[in-house]
Image (tube, rainbow, N blue to C red; front, side, top):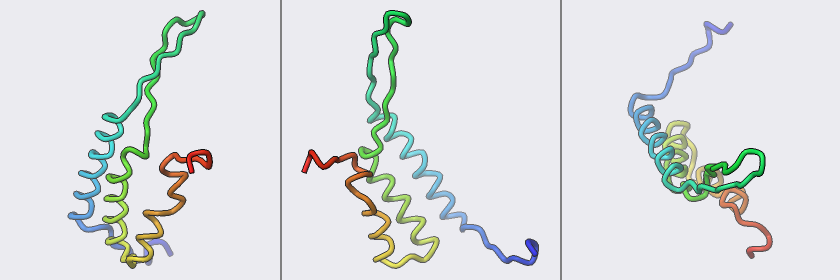
Length: 97
């Protein structure tokens, strides 16, 4: 049955766009990462890198746009995806309202 299933993969331009955007997101995450120092009696100073995904939201939205085009989503469907649970995705809490 699986060999009878027709599937066409994404176009090369879509794959190229996603590759470029993936690199852009990684660069954005690295650029916006926060470095926190934790001092421990047993381990000394430990530096921890914390990624803040909300600061890369514009790049993530670009990926959503490419995927929406690939899958043929309507403008309303894309809007739903981009704005889905926006408070959670942007890191806001009820205290900030």
